[in-house]
Image (cartoon, rainbow, N blue to C red; front, side, top):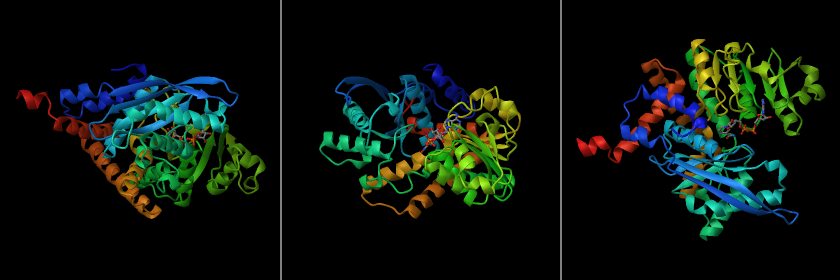
Length: 427
Ligand code: NAD
C-alpha cells in the first residue's frame, strides 16, 4: 500500500476484505492510484511579483466511470493527502452507485493570504496546468475545503477557453447561472438528513425527544442542524472553531444561523444577540460538546476529532459522520466495543457528490431540474443505498462502516471483473 496517510483508510478496507470474495486483480488494482499529477503554477501577485504554487490532481480508479472529486485549497495539502482523499472518493462513489471513479485535487496555500484577483489567477492557472488530465468524460473536479461555487465557475470558464467550447460538465458545484444545480449547496446536509430519517426509526427514535449535538456550524453542520430542528429533533448543542453552546431544552437553530451569517461566532450569538435573553444556555468547549450525554452526535467540522484519547468518554449512542474522517480507526474499535452505532462518512456525507452527479447529468442533457426534483432524486438515492448497506450489516453482523466498504467493494470488484481477470483468461 502507498504510505502512512492511507493506512487509516486501508485498515477499514482490510476489515471489509474479509467479507467479500474479491478477485486478486481487483485487490491489486485498488492498491495504487491510476495517475497522480503534480504541477507548479506561476501566479502574478498584485504587487507585481511572481509566486509559484504547488498543485496536485490524482485520479485513483476509473473502473466505474470518469473520476470525480473536489479541489482543496489548504496549507496542509500534500500529494499523500490528495491520494488518500481520492481513494475515499472511489469508495464513496461506488457505495452510492454513482457512475464515477474517485479523484481529488488540491493546491498548497493559505487562501486567506491571497486577494480575490490573485485567487482567480491561481484557479485559472491550476486549470491551465491540469487541462489535459480532466474533462467531462475523464475527470470532473468539484468544491472542497476553501473552494466555492465562484472558484468552480472560474475553473469551468478557463477549461472552456482552452477547449474553445463551453463545457459546463467539466466541473460541478458551479454557480447556478453557469450550469450549477439547484440544491447543490445544501446537498451534503440534506443527504445526511435522509440517511438519519431512514435509520433512526429503526432504533425507535422519533424526532420529538431525540437529542442531538452538532460539531461544526459551516455549510454542512449549520444546514443539518436546521433540517433536524425543523423536523422536530431537539438540537441541544452546536459549535464552531471558537467553541460550543448548549441548552438542555433545545436551541433555536434558525436564529443562531442568522446571527452566525452576519459573521459573528456561535458564542457571540448568546452573549450579544437577542436569543440569549430568551434561552438559558451554557458555553462549552468543542471537546465537551463531543462527550455530551445526547442520543445523536454529528461531527461536521474536521477530521480526527474522535480518537483513542476521547472515544471512551463519548456518551452518544448514535454518531453520523457528516465530516470526512472525524473518527480514527482506533477510536472506531473502541466505540464499537461500547455498542455505539457509527454511520460512516462515505454514506452519510455522500449527498454532496450525489447532487454533483445530478449537476453533471443536467449539464450533459441541457435540461435543468427544479429544487423539488433534485431533492426527490436525492432522497430516493440516499434511502435506497442506506437500506442496502443496512441489509449487508444485518446479514453479516458487521458495523455500518464495514458494510459500506463491502457494498462499495462488491461494485468495484464487479466492474474490474467485467473487463476480464486472471480467472477468466487462465481457467
Ligand atoms: P465549512 O468550512 O463550511 O465549515 C466548517 C465548520 O467547522 C465551521 O463552522 C468552523 O468554524 C468549524 N470548525 C473549524 N474548526 C473547528 C473545531 N476545531 N471544532 C469545531 N468546529 C470547528 O466546511 P463544510 O463544507 O461544512 O465541511 C465540514 C466537513 O464536512 C468537512 O470534513 C468536509 O470535508 C465535510 N464535507 C462537506 C461537504 C460539503 O458539501 N460541504 C461534502 C462532503 C463532506
